[in-house]
Length: 445
Image 1 (cartoon, rainbow, N blue to C red):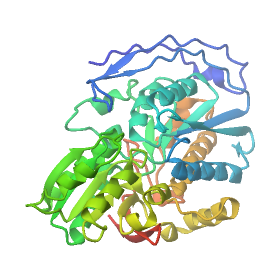
Image 2 (cartoon, rainbow, N blue to C red):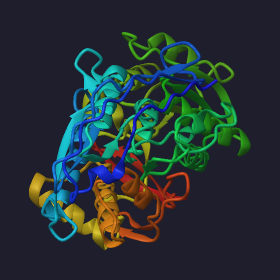
Image 3 (cartoon, rainbow, N blue to C red):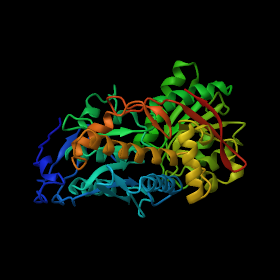
Image 4 (cartoon, rainbow, N blue to C red):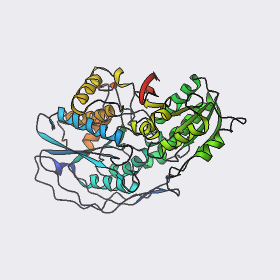
């Protein structure tokens, strides 16, 4: 059951630049229960309160924030995303609507040193902070799907405040989940969609990965996941397709991300296929969850990644994963990333890579272009609101403009958002570790 009290008086007209500065309104605390399993425990999550008063917006000033894990092993990916967002805003001169508005960007960290990765408490705090600051008209994030489902309903209640992700791939954030009916709609308490993403969801990634594994000549596969929303989601989608196309799934197990090692697990897997190892191992996980140690123990027990192929999603497609495991150990590992390789981007994307390299140095992390496109979307929405004679300080207007984006010629190509906030682009590129770096080896749909 969803208990929801919508508490804030949100008077858009009072936020227009031509009006006197609005009086700060207090948001009464909100507690909403959503019937969905969490990574931690239990069968529900609580959308935290929004206790802060709304801060008045400065006339002519707009703010965009991102919420990404800037502490821990995801940093090699997220720093490039932030760099790309900054680059796009600088290219716009930090201005919008013919110079009428100055746009400020702040990169917020949703990770903690204690966890060494995204932290539910920090992400919730970020969302509440953004909700209470009326000058914030776009929230770019999150990186982790589990973090997104905490923030989406908080931001949905205030405006709604549009949320655009460069990296979330769990299908249930935007699409109805047959195993958890009603949950996706529960993320949007106002009944209006306010979350979108510029990457394809895991129902695409898992399906393409299973077909790719079969194309490598594998007939048997063992599946592992880190028991988080993203990792288990992509692993489940991989498994469903694997069974459909005739791959034998020898087993599917959730790992403990905090384990000291996985030698016992890998020893068990090494004899799981009629006394021998499977042809391939698929891991649904993020690099933060001990991904490098898992690979090291696999190679120790079962040999290199040619003898028993090792495949994962974009959560392990990062240089940190290779460096932490060791280039020799990681050699031959495959990982998927939505979209095409950096060298196969359309002209606008290739120009982005050139501009990024000139400012920040060589670019190896593929998610940087998604950060660039996310800021691109936010800026386009603001400009579209102004072009239509609207008010870009009106959160609802900006959110509506995001969902109206169709046939957008961006850094990723020409694409559109559907009614759920999903991109029309479904290309998926496989990368393989070769001589210490991920190299694109093929793009599939």
